[in-house]
Image 1 (cartoon, rainbow, N blue to C red):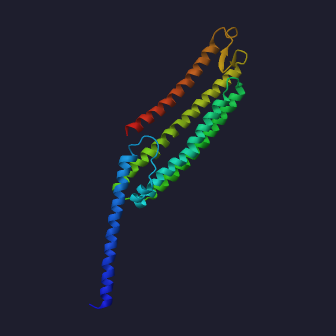
Image 2: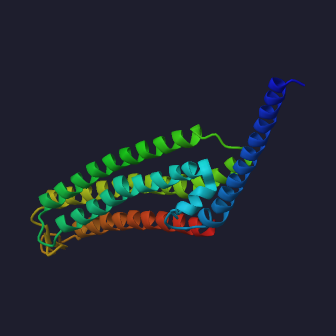
Image 3: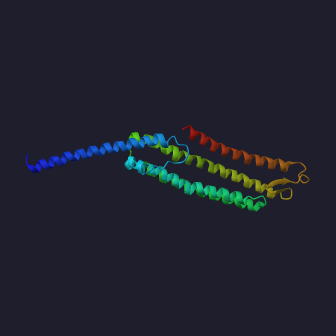
Length: 240
């Protein structure tokens, strides 16, 4: 065997050694990542655990797969969660006891419009994440576990918010109907110190009061439905 051929053979054998070492390392990283998802991520009912540098090193390339879930949650907090909190706070401030019917109507319309914009933002954030998930190259045994994590911390929360947004919009519509009714019956009805009051001397047959009670009951029922949706989502999350 000449020296040149022997050198080529050695390099070829070393190549296999490096290849097998790389395969073994990838398997260890994948197993560490799967274990992390199963034990630390999927059972978690709130918040996203951020792995430290040591953990990321154990996951290798799969650390970037987890980043997809983390970045989605960060985007949801910044672009959906905080805007929703701000919107709710501004809405409550606008509905101060001394607010007029027109001020209340303006606040409701502003709330509805902002809510629609937030829903559009949510759809964009979710679509971006779903595209990133679909582009990941994962062995089947990892993909099966990873999708469970995506379902728990990406899709399920998005569904819950998306279900409550139109329901909240419907409740806002009912509030507008109530304000329209109050306006149409100006003289009989007024809002004083944040309370709806009916002049019983002008509503002798009590029909106006009955209709107001009916409309307020519809609003309360819708609010309870929204609260129930939120509670059901919470129970399902805890149960997973």
